[in-house]
Structure formats: structure tokens, C-alpha cells
Amino acid sequence: MRNALRHNAASSRAAFITAATLTAGLGYLPAASAHAVVGDRVFPVTLTVDDPGVGDEANVQFGHIASPDSNGDNMNVNTVSYEYDKLITRNLQFSVASQYVNQNAPSGSAKGWDNLTVGAKYLVYTNARHEFMASVGLMAQIGGTGAKPIANSFSTFTPTVYFGKGFGDLPASFGLLRPFAITGQVGPNITTASSDTGPNSLGWAFTLQYSIPYLQNQVKDLGLPEPFNSLIPVVEFPMSTCTAGACAGQTTGYVNPGLIWLNRYGQLGIEAQIPVNRATGTHVGVLLQAHVYFDDIFPNSMGKPLF
Image (cartoon, rainbow, N blue to C red; front, side):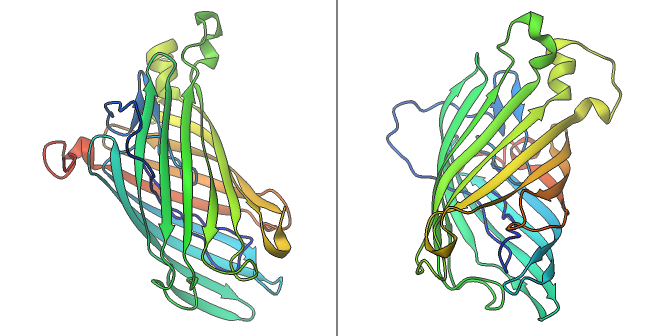
């Protein structure tokens, strides 16, 4: 699903992310539902951590944060990113994404498009009874396709595993815990540059979610009105650990609390970005998301798989 570009505040440029995938010939090929749906569980499209499903969708996201540049000065970074995901088959998704970046620092300003990111993603397993879903992917940020002041000259490839687990299979006596779910992803960022100019890293991230729609429909109807009955409080933890060069062993990342409102045709999201350490930054940022589900809006035309 959404594999949006993400901003890394520990860097002097806005970072990338989008989607992708690795595989064919994996033994079990499940029939995918629209979006990340398994059993009674819907995994929403979170803002920085990719969900475990595939879909036909479009995402637009705005971000603002102040982060340290290479001189240690505060740099205001505004980003507007897009991503388009297209189903090739019911289980295979192709994605294309990029972001426009505007940086302002005491030493000067820069703006322009970041590198183009393309990829595919493959849904390999679902288990409706245990509300579990897993996919594999390979993202590829193509070096030199963006503006020189913003984009890297080298490329980055990231094979990734995605998963999601809902807790609706807990006993009825744990009813208020059943709306909880976790999603996550992990994969190495392998660059074509030297370790000094483009160090490799391990990207790892997870989310903790509490679905009010699941509470209302599967546990107990509290009679909540709109928009409260369609909200999913979420906390995201996008992290990156440097694995080469002078920064080897250093972890940067954020804790992102927020809310997602969703209905059948799309969703809106808002999150704060709280740095986990000084290497990441010292200022809180904000992310805003608008997401459209083409596979539900146009199920018989542009929203259906090509094959």
C-alpha cells in the first residue's frame, strides 16, 4: 500500500521512501482484498510506516520540521510528497513516488524535487483467523533523477519485509484489547555510493494502533458519532541504524503520535514527529496526509488490477 517518501531530520536533505517488492514463486498466493484487509481487521495507511497490504491508491502528504544541517544549524524543511500505487495482479503492486523539498537554513536555502522512487510489492501471506498479513518488497530510489541541491547522486535499494498483526483473536474476556494492532517493516538501505558519502543503514519501524471502528463493530458498540467512530489513534516508530562509515551503530528516528480518520473511499491523517535523540534533532515536526482508495472508488475501471 502506501510507500510514501519520509523525511530524515538527521540528514541535510529530505529522505526517501516508497514501495517495492522482491518475489515470485512463493508457495502461497492469497487473494488480496482492497487495501490491507484481513478478516475483520483493516490496517490503515499510516504516515511513515508502510502497511502490510497492496492496493490501487494515491497518497499526498505534507511535512514540516526543523532539523540540524551538516553545520549543526537549524534548517526548516517543508516537503510535499506524492505516491501512486497500481495493482498489476491482485497480489502485486507497482509504485512510483517523489517529493518536493524546500529547505531554509542560515547558510542558505534550496528547493526542488527529490529523486524518483519506484518499486513493487507482493502480498505473500494472510491469515484471517489471526488477523495476520505479510508482504515483501524492494524499493529503489534512482540517483540523479532529482534536483542537484536536494537529491543524491547515488541510488539506494531497500529489500523490505512488511507485516501486520491484529489482536482480535484474543479471548472475549480481553474485549477492550482486541482493537489493538501492530504493523512493521524492516530492510537494509544499500547505496551505490561510498560509505562516506552514502552510508548503508538498516531501516526498521513499527506502529501501535487502536481501531475505534473495530471496537464499535467487533467488540462493543459505544454509540459514538462521526467522526469519532471512524478514528484510529496510532503511534509510529520509524527508525534507521547506520551500518557503515563514521556513523556506524548510530540510530536516529522519531516517535509519531497521531490520528487517522478513514471511511470506505479514503482517509485523512495527522501526526507529530518527536525526535528520539539529539542526533535526529531537537524540534517537533508535523505530518498531514490525504489518501484515496481507487480500488473502492473505481473498482471496475482504473481501480482494478491490470491482470
